[in-house]
Length: 71
Image (cartoon, rainbow, N blue to C red):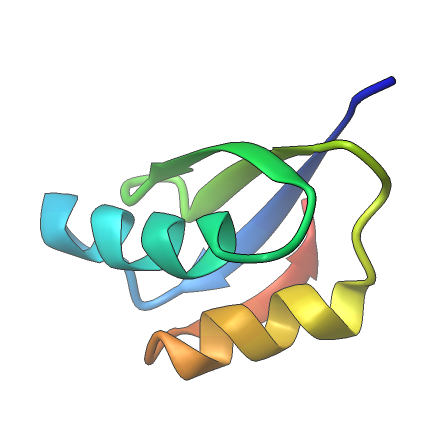
C-alpha cells in the first residue's frame, strides 16, 4: 500500500531548489518518490506509509527551506 501527500514549501525558486528539497525528502524511510514544483511551492511525496509531518518539516528545514504545511 502506498500513500501520497502534498506539502507547501517556501523558498524554492529554481530547479536546483527543487532537487535539494527532493533529495532531502527522498532520504526519509519509506519514501518512494518525490516531486517538487518551485513555482507553486508544492512538493508531492509518495511513501509506503503516511509520513509524520514533524519528520517532513525537519527534512525540509534541514535542506534550508521553510516547511509551511500540508497543501
